[in-house]
Every structure is written in C-alpha cells, then in structure tokens.
Amino acid sequence: MGLKHVVLAFVLFSLCAFFTSAQPRCKFLPGQVWKGLYRGSEQPYGGQEVTVNITGPSTWEEVTTFTHFRVAYGLSSQNQLRLKDFDSSTPPILTCPSNSLGTYTLDWTADCSSVVLTVVQDYCPRRLVGLNKIVLSLADEHNTCEFAQRSTWRGYYPDNNVLVGKLASFRFGAGAEVTEDSIETTIITQWALNQDGNLVTSDVTGYPLPGRFLCPSGDQSLYKLTWNSQCTQVKLTLVKDSCRYRRERYNNLVLTKAATECSFKTGDLWTGLLAGNDPRLSGRKASVSVENGMAVTARVAGVNINNFWFVDSFGDLRTRDLSSNPSGYTCPRSSLSQYALTWSKNCTEVMLEVIRDDCLTRSNVWSGAKLAKVPASTEPPVIVNFNFDKLVPPSARPCFQA
Image 1 (cartoon, rainbow, N blue to C red):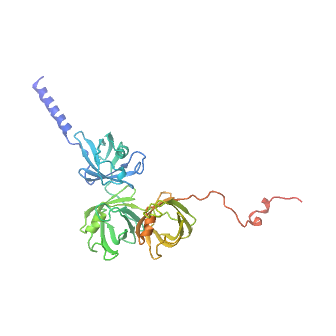
Image 2 (cartoon, rainbow, N blue to C red):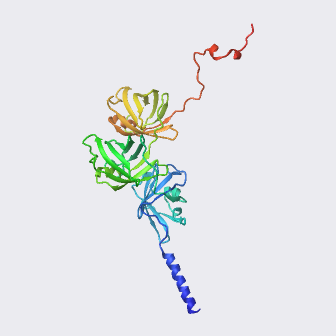
Image 3 (tube, helix red, strand yellow):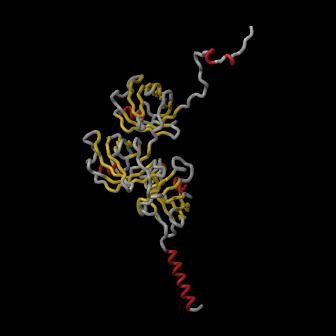
C-alpha cells in the first residue's frame, strides 16, 4: 500500500472516530415544551395527552389532567435516555421508586422536532406502559390560549408553601379581576397576559383582613404560562415575583379549567359514598334527592339532612343546612360553604371538594364525596284524569252495537 493510500485511510478513520464520539445533534433543551399521548389504556394516564416541560438540563415534568411526574433524565455515551422519577411526583402510588432506572433509545426526525422513545430496559410499570413507543413533538412556543371571563380554574397548591395540597379555585370576573378562593383565604387579584403570553398579576384585597397571604397592591409579578393543546390546563412558572406569599402559591401551580355546564336538577337522585372525616357518617352510603329547586334531602345511615344546594354561575356548590332528623347533624343556618364540583364528561358523576366551609362538621362529611346520578325510570308514564272524549277522536273510538 502506497503512502497516499495510508494517509487517506488515516483521514477516513479519524473522521469516523470524530463522528462516532460527537455529541448527538438533537437533544432536549431547557424551556422546551413537548407534547404526546401516553401509550396503553391504564387509568388514569393511559391514552391521555401529556405535556413534557424541560425544566432544566437534566430534569423534566410530565403533566396530564390527573398526574404530575417529576423526572431526572440523562443521555448515556450510546445516546440512550435514562430516566428516574422524583419522590415528589403525584399521585405517589404511580410514581416509580427512586432507585428504579429506565433506559430508552431515541429516534429523532431530521429536523429534531419529533422523537420516538423505545424501551431498552425498565421495570417501572407506569414508564414502561406509558413511554414505550411514545411520540413526542416539539410544541409551538406561541399559542392563543387565554382565561375567559366567567370561567373557573382549579388546582392544588404546590409543595413549596404552607398551603401544600389544598384546593384553590380561581374565578375570572369582569375585566382582569380574579377571585382566588381556598380554605384559608380569599384574595382578589388582577391577572393580565402581556404581549409575550406571560401572566402579570397584582393583589387588590383579601379576606379576612389583615390578609395573611396578601401582597402589597402595587407589587406586580410575572409568570410563564405553559398550556396544553386544548387550552384546558396551564402551568405557572416563576419569572419574577418579589412577594414570597404569592411566589410560594403560584410557582409550579397547575390549573385545570372546570366544567360549568353540569348541575343538579329537580327530580334527580344521586347516590354514593361519603369519604370525609366524620366518625359517624364517613364511609357510609348516601343518597341525595333534589326535591324542589334548591331544596335537597340527604339520607345517610338513617339520618335525614335537609339543605339548600345552589350551583353558582362559576360552577361552585354553595350549601346551607336547614334541619336534620334526628337532630345534631346540621350546621347553623348562618354557616355558609363553597365546594368545587368535578364532573364526568356526561354530567352523571360528580366529586365534591371543599374550598371553604364555615362549619367543620359539614366539611368533614361532604369533602371528597363521590356521587353518581341514578338513571331515570324507563317505564311509560302513568296518565291520570284520563279524558276519553278529549284525547280519543271519534274516528278512533271502538264501535259498539246494541
């Protein structure tokens, strides 16, 4: 072999070694948002749309309507993706053990805008079922999502404040006014989206005063909004906020738009189990009959409780106790409450979650209750006061001969 051939072979070998050892051209970058559909049919995440927020150089979050997984990731020298769940993921029962690692290959498109994950090894069921063969696509950074007036959004305060895990309800009124309700406080705020689609907020007033969680009225904050493709769920991520009370409530808060087209109707009968903390009634089967407008009778373990139930224009349930038989199961009539209603798509199932309730006895009974609508009878109606001459024309009457 001549010198020319030796030099050429050396150059080719060097180039091959360079491209073999080079870093992969496509990769996940902090701030990116990827979207896809979880694989499988397992509840509550199977088949659900998932938003993957790349929160750092080695972390991401998988967010759906029902789950929120915080994940550490890294790339091996073979360009394989390795995943590990953080303990702070929810729900905990589906979170992979912290010592359980998953390994996946990455198959990118030429423009790096889409990628397919294929399992190499993973012993965690939620990842193995949900992520194997999932297709993730880079989301458009620009969107037209917004908070509509008269809409209600709900979420649970994140794990970085004293309200951790408590339900929060955000009701959007006229203009930029937003009412933030929780079991601890009510805060009136101003929310507006700037030209970049980021959220600008400032507190106005609160209840009770002096507000424990209220920020100075002139103190504005800035949060990045990450929406799902249907504009029905959004995550707030801190950009700038000098007020600790708001920062601890809003940073990493995930809000879901509440259904407000469902309601309770006169004549409805609902049954279910009480899941509260009342030692006398919790875990018992309950039936709720809507008797006339707002009048409701709840029957639990031989106890009849008469209430007013009213679903307001924002979809929240307001209740007031009237009486009970036997006595001792009601709250004072001046004691008011507010419950979030989470409906099924066909409005036949509903879950109650307390937002605020002046009476602990009532919230211990109803918070967490799940009710299902009893189907109406399919039997033909019974006609009373039947008027033969009016309803049956002469031509249709039987002919009798003497």
